[in-house]
Length: 578
Image (tube, rainbow, N blue to C red; front, side, top):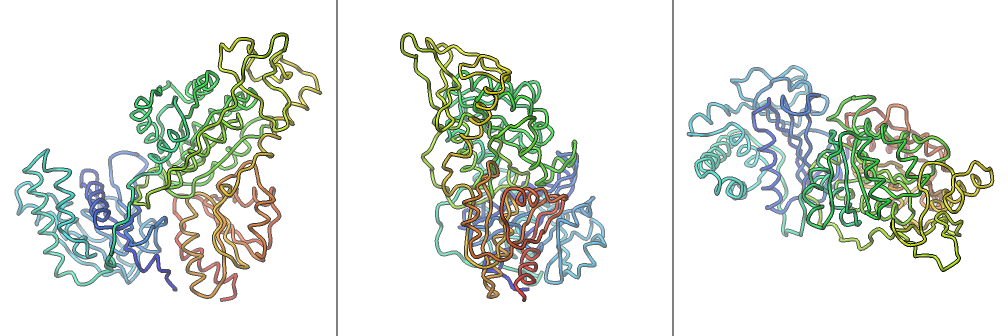
């Protein structure tokens, strides 16, 4: 299998263990040490349906180049113990080039992993930890991994100093001793994949997609959030609880999703740009209020961090299956905005853009993020500070003798919205169809005029190049969205290395559709591969309904398994005749 530069300059590691084993702590320290040494990273967590506690796997990919996708295999798998780790077997692909590090006191390597042919190496983590007062097996593991991949141990001890030295000197000393002992023990394990050296340390950020969504909301001008906690969106709310008061904003934890969306619509009506965050079950509850937001032309943003469905589904895993409810879930003809970030860093930009669009167009905007973006941490290039913020058109008091028309039929479809209390600008804002002044109406002419207005302001807006990420040229194209973009990008790079000219089209604006822009992006493309994490091919069906496509193939499945670059790459080779 041909590997891209991105694959050759990275190492993929998984650390597994039962609740309390400390694999997440060790993985976070590994990530921080790699960042200090100048590397980029992607760090995700795999957990069981209990959401918190129990067995877990920390999945880390370190690279000398920016990385936005998991790799084809888990090159180093370390298990502090094997309690229920077999449940993660499908998420930890192994082959004969991989290494499994196991503690011989914790039982045999599960058969499903042992039969992969990976080299098995024993490391008595618990026994080695007992030799150090206060020593912990996870620090033995951390030292061993750093030694194997070539990450300087001094960098790790500096990270330990930042987190432990001022709090507990004894814990710091024990951890440093354990890391060094683990590194020493790794000297007899043989060779593994090592990180390439880095010559410089460009400015990078350590951030999760959910933190990025919160930052994007604040950058976009949001000053109010009401929400009800739900996995995997809760971290957005946690971030905003600290950020909003600092800018004079307000956060309210509502009693449920119905209350939260109605509070946001009310706050927005009062002049405060508003946002809420939820997941699929919460979005289902919010659709009626979103219809009221649309009919009353009151801007609001909803971030849906998608998880496996239907119903409660799999709260801790990713899926791209909320697309249909986001696009079509509201009753009636209900044109609205749907956008989707395609990387951890893009969660910042896309959420900021969503606020801008909602405020400018006075419409509800749904941001379709995903668990694998929201709850994963990345060491990413420092993102640009984009200048735009929400630009709501504010109504002024009408001239004497004039009647204020809140829903005036303007050329753009956008009519100025007053701040409550503005003299002469009283109007009714509810879910009923209405005249230009807001008076409830069941007349056909008013309905025709207002439905045209609400559609015109979205389809006539100039979205610029933000509608999609388009990279490369060729007769083959991969069309995708959301978290599948990272694997697709790496696959396209590999195809180019094999002499196949291919391009990537990752949609950021899902509604309204942009047929003219897509036509330009597909110019010269003879075959397209649509990649999505949905069992029923929701994205593919949407594309076929809205766009003129060339000969198209579909690569899809339900969550929670992410696409690996080699899956997309092999399809491109077949489509390109290689």
